[in-house]
Amino acid sequence: MLGFIKSLKKRLAKTQNQFIGKIAETIRLRGKVDEELMEDLEEVLIQADVGADLSMDIIDKLREYVRLHKEKDPAEVEKALIRIISEILIEEYADEDVEHPIGSTKPYVILFTGVNGVGKTTTIGKLSARYVREGKKVLLVAGDTFRAAAIEQLGIWADRAKAEIVRSEQGADPSSIVYDGLMAAKTRGFDVVLIDTAGRQHTKVNLMSELGKIDRTIKKVIPDAPHESILVVDATTGQNAITQARMFNQASKLSGLALTKLDGTAKGGIILGIKHELDIPVRFIGVGEQIDDLRDFNAEEFSQALFGTIED
Image (cartoon, rainbow, N blue to C red; front, side, top):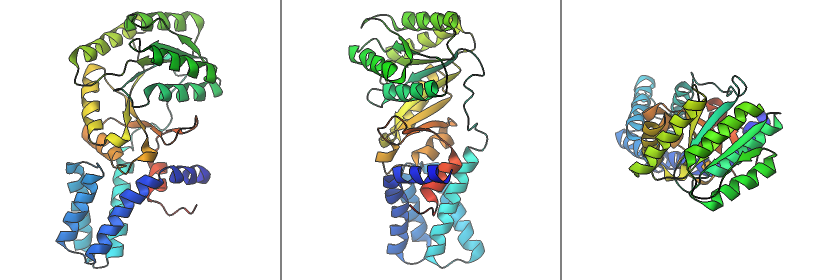
């Protein structure tokens, strides 16, 4: 476990340097504990995409700590703020399952959605490789029929992961491909089905309506599916990720998020912001380009890696 957290800490170096570093810099530059410092720290949190409401709540807790302890030492205020953020993060995820119940039903269907360019197909590929390593029989469904490159890319991942794939030509009806894939999964005994869909802007009503059609098609074949509906979002987009999640959740009820490119952003507060504002948990985090760099999100491990004092 310690080795895993140390590895995650290295992946989160940019987030840590910018997010935690900005807190330390702000406190150092102010040099004393006063209301102006509180306002400056609140702005730091908002800029890190923690969200305005939650940032206010965090700073209110910090003010209360300072008042109760009559704290004048800036270094102790910094420790208190990091502790408050960490405790809120863990509390927000207290009721979320760490392990995902793959195998609890067969086939276990996961639907993936998201806007263009967020790493959706790559996320599916990395997950498929993990499930195959775990001994699962995995089927990928190439529901993104708008781009020939997307079908080809998913096929490459299927070969790499030693998973199977159902696909068609560019321009085919996505719902038909999904239907064929799920029927094949039922008759051939697949454990897991991962469904790719076309990247779509959350502001395009017709494309979002099509996503609703795909969701209904899944339910026709397997009434209690999809068992998970994962929105893939790019962590570097910050608050826009919350807007995306809100819109996609209306089209197909989301069970969680896959947050990609977390290793390349200073806006690590988005993990707190999304959960607090929408009550949609982060399920997976992407912290690199390698096949093993997609991790299950665990609030305690993430908190230790981002805020902890573990030495490299």
